[in-house]
Picture 1: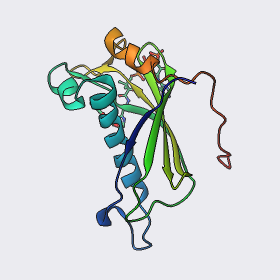
Picture 2: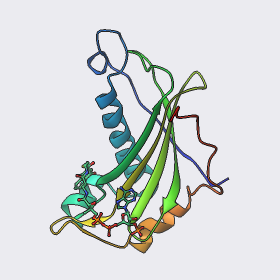
Picture 3: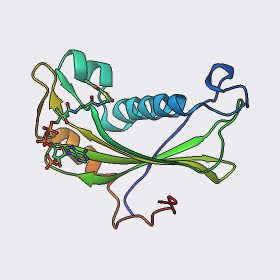
Length: 148
Ligand SMILES: CC(C)(COP(=O)(O)OP(=O)(O)OC[C@H]1O[C@@H](n2cnc3c(N)ncnc32)[C@H](O)[C@@H]1OP(=O)(O)O)[C@@H](O)C(=O)NCCC(=O)NCCSC(=O)c1cc(O)c2ccccc2c1O
């Protein structure tokens, strides 16, 4: 198995709904924050810098999220990120959120490398591609039953 990037996040009071469960749009925010962490700590480029200086961005084109168990105020989920697709311009990242070793969220997000000003797809630059190769999954992961 390729390497995994790991980071930790905090579920705060403002993230949860009246049922005490992280509201689903917040999960999307968590995932984008984890994506930014990946850029800074694994790729070695601040995402802000990528956008502002290099004029490159990775908008989301497809999201596939299983909400397996609730995330609650006070949880500090461990986030494991792997790469399931590394295309010419497309980048598929899997985010697995675990609390006490139990999977809470299992998300597969596909983004596309674009030139920011034109929004035209761009080949993922070689220096970044190498870093995503380092967390590339060996084989397609066993999918959770999405009840589909
Ligand atoms: C992003 C687009 C401009 C891409 O254009 P288009 O789809 O026409 O490109 P191609 O057909 O050439 O495909 C390129 C590449 O992507 C793969 N792909 C395309 N669609 C999908 C899909 N639905 N599922 C899986 N894969 C897909 C395709 O196979 C090709 O792969 P290769 O590897 O062969 O190159 C255009 O799609 C677009 O504008 N979409 C709307 C995007 C959007 O509004 N998303 C909503 C969320 S916004 C967001 O999350 C976001 C996050 C950021 O971090 C940003 C950073 C900077 C700017 C914007 C951001 C942003 O909006």
